[in-house]
Image 1: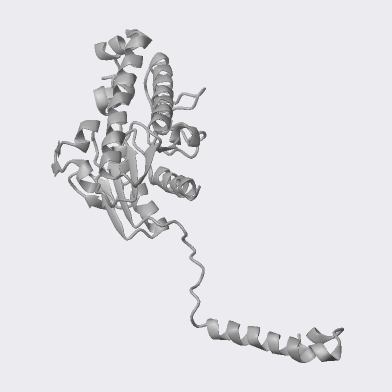
Image 2: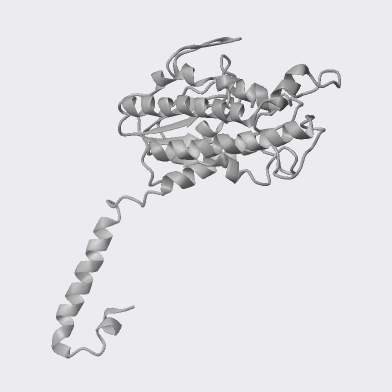
Length: 299
C-alpha cells in the first residue's frame, strides 16, 4: 500500500503528518529486524531435570543402553522428554528393579551398584519425575510372575496368592503408597522449587479381555492383576493430590494398548531382545509417556 493510498480521504493539511508517522514506524520496524529475538518455539523453561524410578522408567532392555548397571535405555521417556524440552542438564538415575528405598540407599544389581537416586536431585533442580512402587513388597512378582505355570502346572505360590483375602492385597498397596509418599517428601525437601510429576503404571490387561498366549495365568489371577493395578494407580492419584505434585495417569492413557491389543505398550511373557523384557514396556510406551508429560507440563 502506497503512502498516497494510505492518506486518501484525509484533508490535505493532515497528509504530511500522516506520511511522517508512517515513515517513522516503517524505519523503526526495519531497524529492529536485526535485533529482535525470534519467538521461542519451546516456551517451557526447565534447565535441569532429574528422573527417578524403576524399570518402567529406565526403559530396561531397550537398545541402545546408556547404563549397563541399571540396563537403562537412552531412548526411555526421560531422554525423549529432555529432547522435546531442550533441557541442558539431565540426571537420569532410574534403574531396573529399583524400590522406594533406593532413593536414599544404593542399589546393587547383577551388573554393579547404582548410587542413591536422590543424589541426582539438588536445590537447583527444576523438574523431577518419579515412577516407582511396584517392586516394593514384591508387588510386581505377585502380579506378573507368581501365577505363571511351571511345566504347565499351577504352583502352590499361585494358589496362595489367589486364596489371599483382598484385604491383604489392599494392605500391601497402602504400605507401598506410604513409601511413595515419603519418596515425594524427600524429593520436595531436596528440590523445593522443582515441578514434580508422579508417573503411574500402564495397564497390562484390558478390562474384559485375556490373552493366555501372552499372559498365561488363570482367569482368577488375571482379574486380580486388573484390580491390583487399578488400585495402585488410584492410590497414586490420591498421593499426588495430597503431596501437591502432578500425576501422569498412564493407566487411563493406556486403554487400547494392553498386552492383548493390536498396539501393545507392554510386552507379554516372551522377552524380545533389544525391544522389551517380559511384561515390560516397548519403545512406544516411552514415546507416549514423553508426549503426555510434555502436554502436562505445558499446563
